[in-house]
Length: 160
Image 1 (cartoon, rainbow, N blue to C red):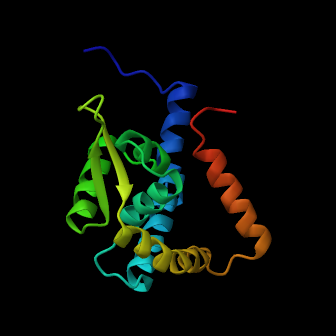
Image 2 (cartoon, one colour):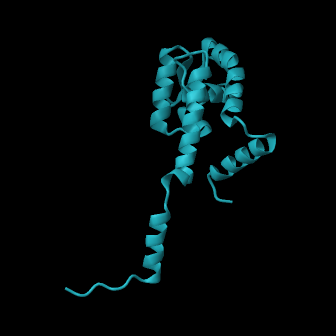
Image 3 (cartoon, rainbow, N blue to C red):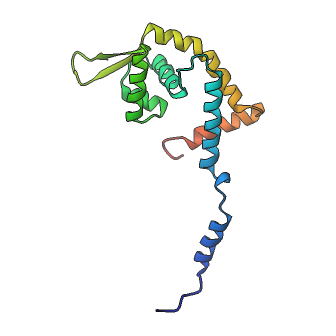
């Protein structure tokens, strides 16, 4: 067996980084905690106990886009295709959205709000705005602008 080598500078740097790493100070952890806080505020504040934050996002995007594909709703809400399908099925079961098959291409389905869905979005949107305010809590106006700017920049699909 060969004698072990002394750690190289890069190896020592890696070991130092590992010893200093604190998961609770990492961006992913902090974003997750902030999102969990937002979801808790949403569930405590929203009038409809069956409505989740992601369901509201899909309903709101559907209202803004009008009749659209599941793919377009997924893109607008940053929800993957499989998840958006499940959300749409749950909203359809509640008769908040309806699906229409394209007569020219039966493989294409259009999603649109029902009157009940439209009414729910109109009713809940002011509360959703309040939930955003509550999520930002004690941040002053400059901090609110900064955090939204930075989150948009971090979530950009293409690097700047």
